Length: 80
Image 1 (cartoon, rainbow, N blue to C red):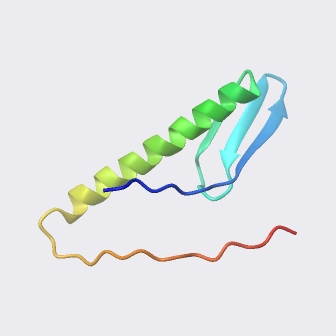
Image 2: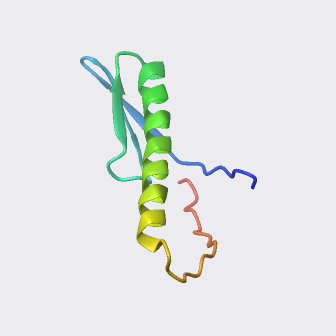
């Protein structure tokens, strides 16, 4: 199966100790780093872990059950 990609918006705030980063579309997914690159790398890795853990939890919850899976699209707002 081909692996797809999704695009998200990362925001990085300069702080006294480096940078704090978060993903606008994924509440609770945030990181920090001494440098922008460190905060960016950590945020990207954390997002992958979050998706993997969610998939694992769903697989356990649905094991042995009859389900319907389908893709859906969400329109994105245009930048102002």
